[in-house]
Image 1: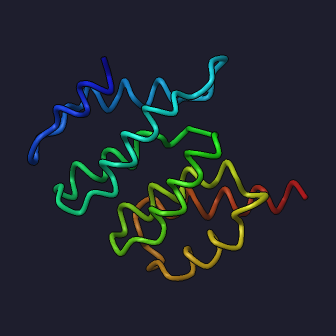
Image 2: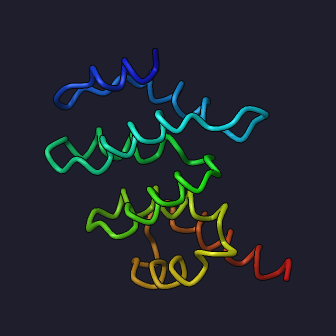
Length: 132
């Protein structure tokens, strides 16, 4: 039902309930992440014909997803020009610091120091460094 609701998103209107439900479904829990849901969010987040507001909401939904599929989507997001999409991708990659630390460090270095949300990424990098 969530995927159907996401596919129905048209124009600049995004169903906040569908985004919230998608995020909850992908939250780290006892059941595996739904690959079709991650794929649908990815299609929408990467679709340059969609408004940035919709793309950013779709990019943020898998924030707590830990699958390799979510990490692959996140890497693609970090390569985009839009800062909101980079931040959303970087947040997912904080769960994959063992393989994506260099990418995150390079990315964070390109952001202005006062970038809203960047401190979460910086904190995750520092915490991981302290744990080593």
